[in-house]
Amino acid sequence: MENSLLIFKEQYRQVKVTHYAVFFGIIVIMAFAVLYNYFEGALKGLGESAVITLELVLLVYAVGAVYIGDLMFIRRLKILTARHSIQKKMELYRSALVFKLALVESIAALAGLLLIVSGIYLVLIVPVALIFILMRNNPTTSRVLSDLPLSLAEREQLASLL
Image (tube, helix red, strand yellow):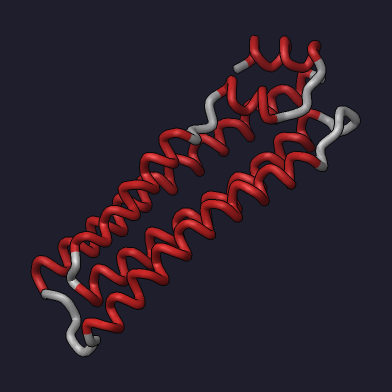
Protein backbone atom coordinates (compact mmCIF):
# COMPACT_ATOMS: atom_id res chain seq x y z
CA MET A 1 0.00 0.00 0.00
CA GLU A 2 2.83 2.39 0.83
CA ASN A 3 4.34 1.88 -2.63
CA SER A 4 1.06 2.77 -4.37
CA LEU A 5 0.78 5.91 -2.22
CA LEU A 6 4.23 7.00 -3.31
CA ILE A 7 3.32 6.31 -6.93
CA PHE A 8 0.15 8.37 -6.44
CA LYS A 9 2.22 11.24 -5.05
CA GLU A 10 4.58 11.10 -8.05
CA GLN A 11 1.65 11.02 -10.48
CA TYR A 12 0.08 13.99 -8.68
CA ARG A 13 3.36 15.87 -9.12
CA GLN A 14 3.31 15.00 -12.83
CA VAL A 15 -0.25 16.34 -13.11
CA LYS A 16 0.85 19.63 -11.55
CA VAL A 17 3.87 19.87 -13.86
CA THR A 18 1.70 19.17 -16.91
CA HIS A 19 -0.77 21.83 -15.84
CA TYR A 20 1.96 24.43 -15.38
CA ALA A 21 3.60 23.44 -18.67
CA VAL A 22 0.36 24.13 -20.55
CA PHE A 23 -0.12 27.37 -18.62
CA PHE A 24 3.33 28.65 -19.54
CA GLY A 25 3.03 27.18 -23.04
CA ILE A 26 0.06 29.45 -23.70
CA ILE A 27 2.07 32.42 -22.48
CA VAL A 28 5.02 31.50 -24.72
CA ILE A 29 2.78 31.02 -27.78
CA MET A 30 1.16 34.39 -27.25
CA ALA A 31 4.48 36.12 -26.56
CA PHE A 32 5.89 34.70 -29.79
CA ALA A 33 2.84 35.81 -31.77
CA VAL A 34 2.92 39.32 -30.29
CA LEU A 35 6.66 39.72 -30.84
CA TYR A 36 6.44 38.37 -34.37
CA ASN A 37 3.61 40.73 -35.14
CA TYR A 38 5.44 43.66 -33.57
CA PHE A 39 8.72 43.12 -35.43
CA GLU A 40 7.55 41.58 -38.71
CA GLY A 41 3.99 42.81 -39.01
CA ALA A 42 0.99 40.75 -39.92
CA LEU A 43 1.15 38.44 -42.89
CA LYS A 44 -0.71 40.00 -45.74
CA GLY A 45 -2.91 38.32 -48.26
CA LEU A 46 -6.06 37.66 -46.32
CA GLY A 47 -9.04 39.85 -46.92
CA GLU A 48 -11.10 41.36 -44.15
CA SER A 49 -13.91 38.84 -44.59
CA ALA A 50 -11.45 35.94 -44.30
CA VAL A 51 -10.05 37.36 -41.07
CA ILE A 52 -13.55 37.78 -39.63
CA THR A 53 -14.36 34.21 -40.62
CA LEU A 54 -11.18 32.94 -38.94
CA GLU A 55 -12.01 34.89 -35.79
CA LEU A 56 -15.46 33.29 -35.70
CA VAL A 57 -13.89 29.87 -36.25
CA LEU A 58 -11.52 30.56 -33.34
CA LEU A 59 -14.38 31.59 -31.08
CA VAL A 60 -16.54 28.57 -31.95
CA TYR A 61 -13.56 26.22 -31.65
CA ALA A 62 -12.58 27.72 -28.28
CA VAL A 63 -16.04 27.30 -26.79
CA GLY A 64 -16.43 23.82 -28.27
CA ALA A 65 -12.99 22.60 -27.21
CA VAL A 66 -13.39 23.82 -23.63
CA TYR A 67 -16.84 22.23 -23.42
CA ILE A 68 -15.73 18.94 -24.99
CA GLY A 69 -12.61 18.88 -22.81
CA ASP A 70 -14.69 19.26 -19.65
CA LEU A 71 -17.24 16.73 -20.85
CA MET A 72 -14.61 14.12 -21.73
CA PHE A 73 -12.80 14.75 -18.44
CA ILE A 74 -15.99 14.06 -16.48
CA ARG A 75 -16.83 10.98 -18.56
CA ARG A 76 -13.35 9.53 -18.08
CA LEU A 77 -13.63 9.97 -14.32
CA LYS A 78 -17.06 8.33 -14.23
CA ILE A 79 -15.58 4.99 -15.32
CA LEU A 80 -13.57 4.89 -12.11
CA THR A 81 -14.96 2.81 -9.31
CA ALA A 82 -13.89 2.08 -5.78
CA ARG A 83 -12.50 -1.26 -7.02
CA HIS A 84 -9.71 0.42 -8.95
CA SER A 85 -6.40 0.85 -7.19
CA ILE A 86 -5.23 4.30 -6.16
CA GLN A 87 -2.54 4.10 -8.81
CA LYS A 88 -5.03 3.23 -11.57
CA LYS A 89 -7.35 6.05 -10.47
CA MET A 90 -4.55 8.57 -10.69
CA GLU A 91 -3.41 7.23 -14.08
CA LEU A 92 -6.90 7.72 -15.51
CA TYR A 93 -7.18 11.14 -13.88
CA ARG A 94 -3.87 12.19 -15.40
CA SER A 95 -4.78 10.94 -18.89
CA ALA A 96 -8.16 12.70 -18.74
CA LEU A 97 -6.51 15.93 -17.63
CA VAL A 98 -3.84 15.73 -20.34
CA PHE A 99 -6.56 15.39 -23.00
CA LYS A 100 -8.41 18.38 -21.59
CA LEU A 101 -5.24 20.48 -21.42
CA ALA A 102 -4.23 19.51 -24.97
CA LEU A 103 -7.50 20.92 -26.25
CA VAL A 104 -6.93 24.13 -24.31
CA GLU A 105 -3.42 24.54 -25.68
CA SER A 106 -4.61 23.90 -29.24
CA ILE A 107 -6.93 26.89 -28.86
CA ALA A 108 -3.97 29.06 -27.87
CA ALA A 109 -1.96 27.82 -30.85
CA LEU A 110 -4.82 28.67 -33.18
CA ALA A 111 -5.17 32.11 -31.58
CA GLY A 112 -1.43 32.72 -31.97
CA LEU A 113 -1.58 31.72 -35.62
CA LEU A 114 -4.54 34.01 -36.19
CA LEU A 115 -2.69 36.89 -34.52
CA ILE A 116 0.31 36.35 -36.79
CA VAL A 117 -1.90 36.18 -39.87
CA SER A 118 -4.29 39.02 -39.07
CA GLY A 119 -2.34 41.34 -36.80
CA ILE A 120 -5.47 41.98 -34.76
CA TYR A 121 -4.55 42.04 -31.08
CA LEU A 122 -8.17 41.55 -30.06
CA VAL A 123 -7.53 37.84 -30.64
CA LEU A 124 -5.51 37.86 -27.39
CA ILE A 125 -8.78 37.87 -25.45
CA VAL A 126 -9.14 34.14 -26.10
CA PRO A 127 -5.75 33.05 -24.63
CA VAL A 128 -6.22 35.40 -21.68
CA ALA A 129 -9.57 33.72 -21.01
CA LEU A 130 -7.81 30.35 -21.28
CA ILE A 131 -5.29 31.42 -18.67
CA PHE A 132 -8.13 32.26 -16.29
CA ILE A 133 -9.76 28.91 -17.04
CA LEU A 134 -6.49 27.13 -16.26
CA MET A 135 -6.10 29.10 -13.04
CA ARG A 136 -9.63 28.11 -12.03
CA ASN A 137 -8.97 24.44 -12.87
CA ASN A 138 -5.64 24.18 -11.09
CA PRO A 139 -5.35 20.54 -9.91
CA THR A 140 -4.99 21.22 -6.19
CA THR A 141 -4.84 18.41 -3.68
CA SER A 142 -8.41 18.99 -2.56
CA ARG A 143 -9.67 19.09 -6.16
CA VAL A 144 -7.95 15.82 -7.08
CA LEU A 145 -9.22 14.15 -3.93
CA SER A 146 -12.77 15.35 -4.58
CA ASP A 147 -12.69 14.34 -8.27
CA LEU A 148 -11.57 10.79 -7.60
CA PRO A 149 -13.91 8.16 -6.11
CA LEU A 150 -11.90 7.32 -3.01
CA SER A 151 -12.86 5.53 0.15
CA LEU A 152 -12.60 7.42 3.44
CA ALA A 153 -9.47 5.50 4.39
CA GLU A 154 -7.84 6.30 1.03
CA ARG A 155 -8.74 9.98 1.40
CA GLU A 156 -7.16 10.15 4.84
CA GLN A 157 -4.00 8.38 3.67
CA LEU A 158 -3.64 10.62 0.63
CA ALA A 159 -4.44 13.83 2.50
CA SER A 160 -1.63 13.07 4.95
CA LEU A 161 0.74 12.16 2.12
CA LEU A 162 0.06 15.19 -0.09
